[in-house]
Image (cartoon, rainbow, N blue to C red; front, top):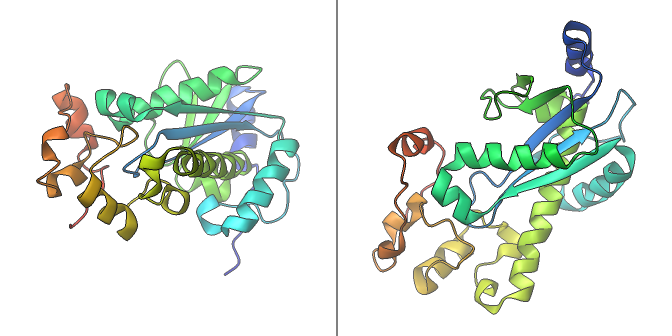
Length: 236
C-alpha cells in the first residue's frame, strides 16, 4: 500500500511563525517493550528532499529499514540518540523516562535546535523547549520520519547484541522481538523470569506468580497514574 511521502510543511510553519532556524524532529522507540531501554532520536534535516521511501519506520520492511537508516545517517544534517535504561524507567515512569531520553538526544546534537517537532499528541518534553506535537508525525514530517527510522534500527541492533553477547538473554529472542511481547518472550519469562534488562515495574509480572516478588513499585503514585494506559500486559 503506497503512502504519502512526508513533507517539510510543519518545519516551514515553525520557521515562519516562530523564527526558528534549526528544527529537530524527535521520535521514540521501545515505549511498549518489556525489556531494554526506551530510545529517542533527534534529527535535523533542513529542507532538502529526503531519500525515496521515507516514512514511519513501522511501515518499512526490516531489510529496507536498515538500508534506509544507513542512507539517512549520511543524509541528515545531524542526528543523535538518547536512551533511558530499564532501571530509569522503573524509577521514573515512562513519561519522565521519555523526557530524559529526549533531552539526552537533543543535548548530544552539535547545535541546540530552536524548535522541536515531536511525534504524537502528548508533549512529554516541555519547557524550555519550543515543541510542536504532530499526530503521526513519523509519517507526515521528514525530520520525524528520519528520526523514527534511525531510532528503530539502532535500538533493534542494541537488543540483538544483548541476545548475542549474554547467554541469559538468548532464550528471550531479543534479536527478533527487540524486547517487545511475543510468544517466545512470554514462554522464556514464565520459565526463567526477568533478566537485569527487563523493566521490573511493568504489569506483565502480575501474570507471573512465581516471579511477582521481583516487581518494583513505582515510588510516585502520580507517575504510576500517568503510565496506567501506557504499559502492555500479557495474558499468560
